[in-house]
Image 1: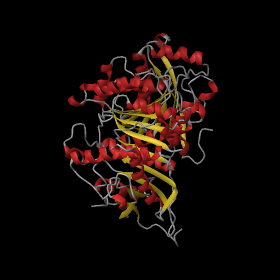
Image 2: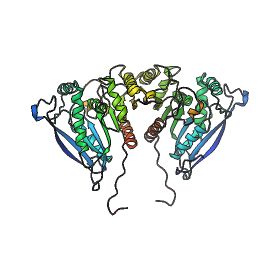
Image 3: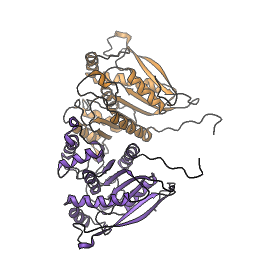
Image 4: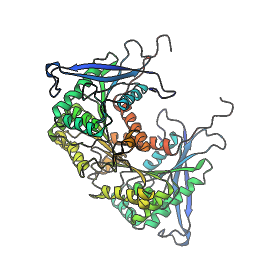
Length: 281
Length: 281
């Protein structure tokens, strides 16, 4: 089931691309082959372009869940690419394996950004994408990945990070590029998420406020932090409970509310007008 | 100008009611006469009922701003009452006078609740109101008033508090009634609001989380805190800047985003289906 009943028709395809000579790829000169998914609305008119949304997956890799989110974005009218940031299409349901892969990737922020950027580039070369309207979203580890992409100065209109554990920059000066790019940051977080270190939300607040010299210098990131009662880590993933990890749990209410907030932000930051079918009025 | 161009037609009327023998009314046995505004959509069908929304004003009193918010709610299809919580229709543009009135009212939480409840009762007796679907919103002081009404166990489906300075309960046990009533609390707050005491947001979080014995005991309030970058006190009021009060400023972006979030919450918690006009299909 790749399609919610009654949802607008969408098409989902595998998007394969190689990051040449990728650092950390372990593949020598051959680089790393990424196995992502791209989803878009069926029935776009010839030449019609829609805003593009990059989906950065949880530490499980670019799995069915990430693909489904891309499909739901396509149902909303966007072109969405769920990015294989590990490469080689690696996915797992084993937390130990996921932890090992995530640890390997996340220890090198330049690698994180390279993998995310490769996904964004792949999205941008798609002829259906309006490259002037781009967003990135991410879940758990992917929420951090999306933030790091924005901190790399990519021309994103907005970033939505769902239950990311790591929200602070390695180097707070990286946030200056966020200000310059005009990217809006929306952090959707569970009020009871124990994966966020005590005090990090306050520090994040400070980072965003003081970026680019702060408001007095025309800086300060346009950001919003939404905190959901009772929600813990992974609150958007209905499959979260199956792993029996303490502090990891699906929360339908917070899932729906944060998705609705994301949709409203997209309407504000990456709006689009569908092209009417030829012959229709 | 009581109507935005192109907005659905609404009707706004003065709603006068007396709180008999009101404590603190200063009016002796005569009680206090309240001079509120009630707004509703034009063209409701005979017997048609809509969810009711109480609007609790800023410390200026039930002025044009409060009335306009009620009108905007009526444009969305609700019946809204902007409540004269001071009584006698007292309004001012003088911060000193406003501070005196607000201080007088807010020092007595039972008085606050009585004044708010009187407005809610007036709303509930309106034949156009679906009394099973009720919300309260409030601005600055009114944000506190709306919270206190919910803490009094009123049967509200949700409360939205915009840039309230005082968010903590006088007695944390009052929040237990919030749990029982099933009321959702949405706090929309400026990230740079200096009128909220340092640490109060964290304490609020704790209050909500532990209310009714906390999640383990089936408690915990359904709440959400949304924090807007760069926004300070009074961020929803375009007239805020005129007062030249440090730390008080309109912020169009945060105003629009918080209003949109409120609308989404209303769709979730107090939905309605318009009754089609007789003879129409």
